Image 1: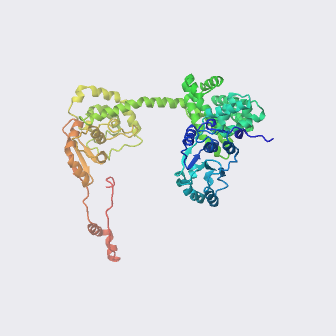
Image 2: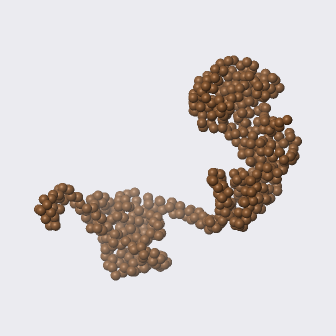
Image 3: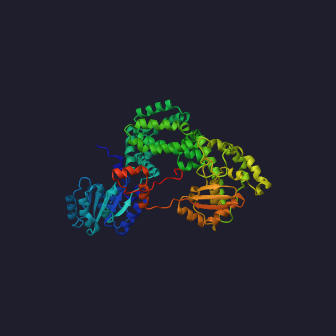
Length: 615
C-alpha cells in the first residue's frame, strides 16, 4: 500500500489545528459564524504556511450542516465531502494550467448556477498569479459583484504580480512565516501521534531548517524518519546534510587560533559530506549571533536564546575566546555573504574566503587599536561640543579680545627667522604665501615656543604695553584658528591679515556690518605700525568696504591695541568699450605694416582678464 506523506496525513481539519496565522483564523471563523462572508478573498504568503489549508477549512465551515458556525464539525456529509475533495459545490482550480481567458469565461458561466448541495458555491484558485492579464480582466466584474452564495478564494505566493484592480476587490490576508517555536510544537504533536522517540535538538534542527514553512518541516521530518522511528540529532544532520556540532566547535577552535590550514581541512571535510552550504551559512550566522549575545549578556540572556543546558555551557565557553568586536564583525560578514555565496558560480571558494577573512580579522583590522581610537574620539567629543557652545554666546554679547601681539612674539620669532632680512614694513597676503617645504619646520618651531608665549601673555606689563613697534605687528605668527574658524592643524602658517580675519569672525557683534569672510581673505592688505591699507581690485569690493569702514577700524584697534587707521583704495581698471579697445590696439606699431600692406582691419578686441599676480 502506498504510504501517505506526513504533510497530507496530518493536514489540519479545523481552525484550531492550524499552526500560527492566529489573526487570519480569527477573522475567517468570525465571518463564518456571523454569516458575513465577503465575495472574494486573497491569501498571499510563502509556501507551506497554510493558505490552501485554511481555504479548505473555510469552505467546510461555510457548507457545514451546522452552519452558521465558527468551526466545521468534520462529521457531517458536507464536511466529509470537502475533506475528500468530491464536493460538487467546492472547486479547486490550478491557476497555472487554467490561466487563459477561455478558462475565465467558462468559470464565469458556471458561477451563474445556484449551489446544488451546500450553502455556498466556493472556487479556490491556487497559484492565482499565473493567470493571464486577459483572464484577470475577465474576472473583474465577477469578483466585484458575484451571484449570491458564491465565494472566490485566491491563493498565491507572489501577490506583487496581481493587478491593483483585482486586489482592490478582495479581502487581502498576508500569511506570515511561522516562528520556530510554532513549528517545533506542530512537529512534536505529529511525532507523538506517530509514537516515535525523538530528541528535542533534532526537532529544533528540523524547525530551523524549515525556515518558517510548516510543509517544509513536515517533509524534512518525513525524510529524517526514513531511517527508523527514532529521531536523533546525529541521524537528522546526516540525512539532511547538515553540519554537526563537533564541526562547528572545530571551526571555532581554528578561527580562534587563526589556523587557516585547519580551516581549509575542515571545510573540505564539510563539503565531502554533502552539506547544504546555504543552510550552513544560516546556522553559522545564528552561531555568531548566539556567541555575541552570550559574550555581552552572559547568563541573563539565556532565556531569550532558548538553549539547552549543555548548549548554553558550550557556547558560553566559546564566546569568551573572542572579543565582542570580533564576534560582531564575524556576524555581520556572515550575513552579508549569504546571498553572495549562494549566487556565485564557486560557492565553496567563496565560503573558504569568508572563513579565512574571519580568522584573519584581528590582523586585517587591529581591533584593539580601533577600540582605543574610538574611546579617545568619544572622550574628546563632549569637550569639543562644550567649546562650541561656550564660544557661541561670546559672539552675541561682547567682542572677544585676542591676546596682544606680544603674546605671539616668541612663537613668531622662530616662524619668521628665515625671513628677518626682508623689511617688515609691508606684508600683503598674496606676497606672504608660505613655501610647502618650509611649512612643517615653522609649525614645529612655533609649537616648541608655546610655553614661552604663554608666560608673556600672563605678564601684566607686556599685556598692557600699548607701544608696539612695526616689527611687533609684522611678526604676528600664524595663530591656531580652531576657536575662530576651525582651521586644519596641518594648514600652512597664516599671515597677520588672516589672523585679523579670524578675529573678525569671532569678535563681530550684531551691530557690526562686516563684509563676508571670503571677501576679507581675498583682499590685498598692507599693515604698518599705525595704518592698514586695503587695495580693492573691483568697484564692488570698494563699495562694500566703504560701507563697513567704521566697524573694520574699530576691530583693527581692538586687535592691535593702538590707534590704527584704515585706508581703502580702488585699483580696479576702468571699463573701456569695445571701440576704445579697437582704437587703442590699432595704434600698436607692430601692427602698422599689416594694416597698410594687407589692408587688414580690426573688428573685435576684448581685454585680457588677468589676475593681480599677472599684472
